[in-house]
Image (tube, rainbow, N blue to C red):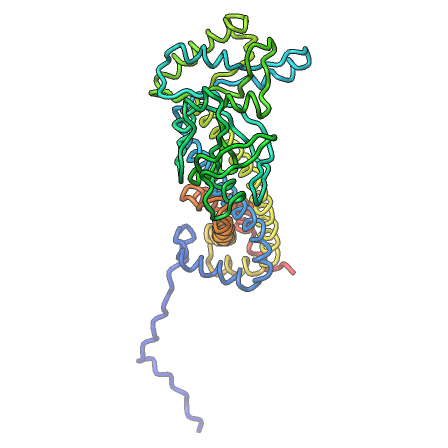
Length: 438
C-alpha cells in the first residue's frame, strides 16, 4: 500500500525581504577625495602621455615666472641706480630729439659755457650746479695705457654725482679758473694704469698734454659710473683736450648742465626759469615749439624708464602666456582622447549608479591635476632660471609672490577652461550606448 505523502503545513513560510526601490532622484555625490584619487590613478596609468600633456603648461608657466621675475629685477636695479645718482638732479642738455631734423637744416643744437654761466646767475633753488663735457682720449702712464672718457667739469660735479675719494683730492675752483693740467682717476682707470701702486702725484699724458694725478675715486659702480673715466677741469678740456667752440666762436660748448635741486617741489620753478632764459638767449619761440634744448629731472626720467620697463615686462609675459594657451589646447585634446578610450568605463560607472555630476567632476579634476601639476613644475623651473641669473651677479632677481600666484593661477584657469568641454562630453554619454561601444 502506497504511503501518502503528507505536507506539513504547520510551519510558516519564511518572510520575503523586499528591498526599497532605487531613488533615482537622489542627488548624492561621490567623495571628492575619491574622485581625486581616481584622477591621479588615471594619469599615472599613462605617465608619458600625461607628461607630454603637461609640457605646454610647464613651458608657459616657466617662461611667465622667469620673465616677470627678471623684469622686476631689472626695474629694481634701474630704480636703485637712479636713486644712487640722486633723484633731485636736473639736466639741461641739447634737444637730441630734434637733432636729426636740425642737422638736416644745417643747425646743430648746442649749449655753451655762456649758457651755463647765465643759468648759474639765475640764483635757482639748487645746492650745486656744474657744466660738463666729455672727450675720448688715450691716457698713457709710464707702464700702461688705456682708452678712457675724460670728463671736464667743476668742483660741484662731485656733489651732484655723489663721488667719494679713495685718495687725494678733487679738482678745485682755482684749478678750473687756471685750466690747471690735473686729473682725478676713476677706480678702474687707476688700476689699469698703476695697478696696486700709488697714483696720486704721478703724471699721465692725454692728447700730448701732461696731467698730474691729484686724486683717485672710490669704486662707484652702476649706471653712469665714472670708474673707467678721468675727471679734469672743464677749462682744461676745452682749451687743450679737444673742446669745441660755439657756433659764434665766442665760447665753448658743453654737453650738459647738471644741478641738484633743494627739493623735488622746486623742479617746476627750475625748469620754467631755465627754459625761459634759454629761449631768450637762443632766440626761440616762447611757446617752446622749437626748443633746441631739454630740461629734465632725474625723477621724471626714472618714472618714464620704469613705465617702459613695466610695459615691456607685461608684453613679454603675455607672449610667454601664449604657450599656456597652447598647453590648454593640448590638455583638451588629450582629455577628449581619454573620454573616447574610457567610454565603456564611463558606461559601466553610470550603470552601477554614478551620476553625470560624478563623471563631470572626475574629468574636470583630471584636467586640473594636469594643469596645476604642470604649473608647479614650471614655477620651480622658472625659479631655478631666476636664481641662475642672479648667481651670475649680472642681475639680482627673485620670484615674487605676485608672479608665482599669477603663473599658477593662470595654469589653473587654463586647466579649468579647457577641461570643461571634455568633462561635459563624458558626463552626457548614454550608459547603454557607452556599454556597447567597441
